[in-house]
Image 1 (spheres, rainbow, N blue to C red):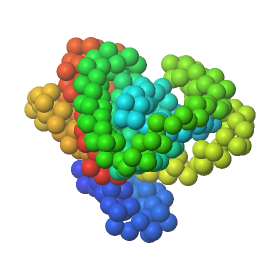
Image 2: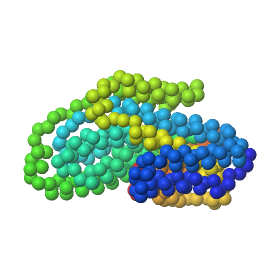
Image 3: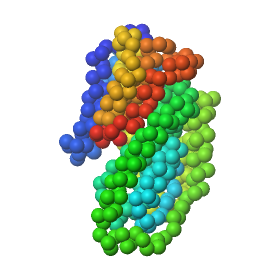
Image 4: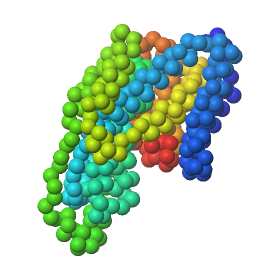
Length: 376
């Protein structure tokens, strides 16, 4: 950068995160109608500052490329998973539910937390329709929509951003699998205890229905597994530029046009969720630039934070804010203190030699309790 970032320019980022957190709660109708204007307006303020105030076109270009890679991955997994329909009825015993959640957590590392949630939420609700309570939805969100996907860059969007920054694909799985196992085991044990209590309290008529034979599992749209493999393979493609994104878009288009309409209807598939994600993250990515650049420039002044600092700070913020900007902010604080993050070899060397800080940053952003909608 030619000029240091004005700390006041971090304000649009804070305003956007605050409105995303409070808007759906305080004024849901207004928010649904106007959230694109809020995201675009705050993003435009930051873009204007970088264009006119800093004359930093390269920073905008690199952010746009990262945003495109990010949203194309999420969108392609969303479309492909929307072409697979799982049908099941009943059999919602506590043990069956616990196994379902465990398998869903593993799937989240392949389909992404968004794709896995979309694929599995309806079968989950149908399985438990005779005794559905709030804890079924809450633990589904905790296990499949959050903790489950924290082993791979495909599973968790913030980890994909770290992958784009130069962190090796399998580094998180190699170093953080104990965190994943412990977090998942604790959540599954808690769920099993609560679900057993709920099951025993269910009326006898409900338990007798669960004991009756039910339709077997049925999977429709399995041809989309081919398109999933294409998306997963594309993640490892680096050259030439934009080939990765082109392959993902092609796979998503192939899935969309070859999937039977009845499958999309059974999944109640539409593009509104991914449209909202794309709009809000466009604002987040661009308003986040001053915060990230300020952290890079001033990380050395923060002293030498311990791994515990990264664990509790990133976890606390991820529980109330979106975990992607939280992860990137702390990642840039680590990078700025030790290396030039633009040099991939330096990033990979830091990852191999200073992994404690990064491991304590990776786990909590997925595993701390989510206290707001935006954190989910």
